[in-house]
Length: 286
Image (cartoon, rainbow, N blue to C red):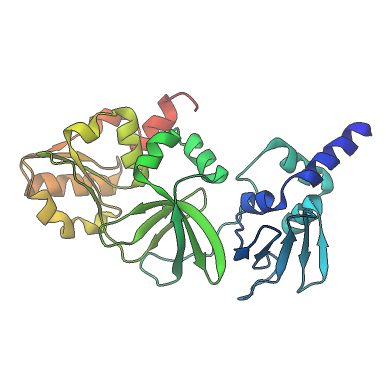
């Protein structure tokens, strides 16, 4: 009994702001004493969910209820006190994060709120799960906070050449329009072409010298190959590192047919679907 009391007490003393962040919720406004959120219990456009930082308690003005960390987690997740204590105590980050509503690429439903250096524990854990070191990721991607239908989310963000953002997390695979390629120029005569954000990160993880010997083009969608031909035509050598799937096969054959100097480099990760599949399968945990 004393053990559970101690565990409960520790859970109540955890920062509510941190708990809400782990749950994927960020304040709309805050001060030293309080933070205001859009309620996690319903849709709203004006924040009515208040956290007192001095008392470490929350109160939802719309429903007239409040409480501590345990009350919050049990209500949001409809779980037992025991399950809430286990989550609050073991530091699990991703298991309770809610996925956003589905939005197709190109739809104008994503509002970028802020971008910052990658810091959020859930995103760092997501990178660890995919065997990408934090210091490497910070070279190429940012932490992006965005809103969909007035609800706030966060993800890894890779900026494209049209000032849009490719957004990735355990639950997100979105694009804040406009859609475009991400072109990393280092002044080399060779260009490596990959499909997406994690292909870029995995490429550099497998061989840190890539940025010292080649420029890199991240297509962000195979549909953008046609719009990338002016970039491709500038290079004396093209290294193609697309996915090992039928779509990747077709795109590789198309590019090799149009650019005789292009080479298929997928043997580097033969037996794996893509570069990150190889890294996740063969690299030790971080």
